[in-house]
Image 1 (tube, rainbow, N blue to C red):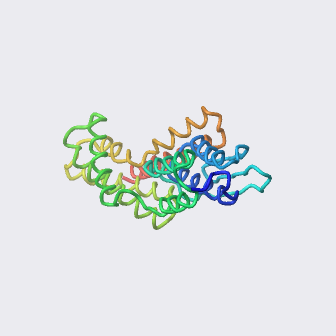
Image 2: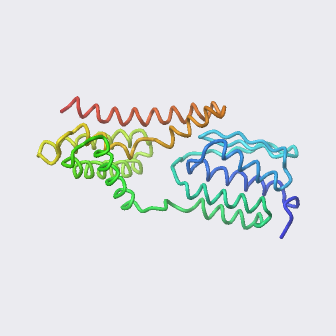
Image 3: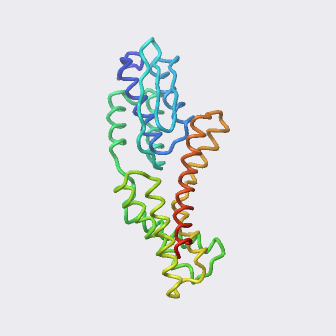
Length: 252
């Protein structure tokens, strides 16, 4: 196996940017992305490299006087398995257990992988979570099935409209509106007892819990740009959910 120091800078930069891109798109914290990129660069003889990570892009300056590289981040989701896989590759690189060529192949393979879970399984999980949240928020067992139906349909609408519109805000707004409509219909025909509890439980799968956690973590760590950006993104999601439900209450 080639020693790390023998690798061309361009190849090391490619690995660092690809690893950072996958982690950031998969929901990793800013500090974790920067730390991983720095460790990989250091392992290949570039200890003075610098990285600046934001939710929408990565800027990486390799040691040795080369110009900085920019990688734009367009899509962000939550996939902790990908974060763990990239971390494992990073550790193998740092320990000299993996060649840089194999690392590039593995990272490209991870990057091309889709979600670990099928759409059917995601909707099923959202349905069960919605029903359980309705009970947790002191709903009656009469609200269990309506919350399951409303939450599942809401998540289905979210996935469908997100693919159609490509703007997450509108997909969340429409999904919340649909959850409100379905909840009102189910309670009006006697399938549910409390429309408020059913709606609250049903929108929980759309709530950006990880985004809020990462925003607070980034702010506390001093990554103000990333923290504020993630906070604004979480606020927009919360606003879309609230607006969608509020429209239902206004028109009905």
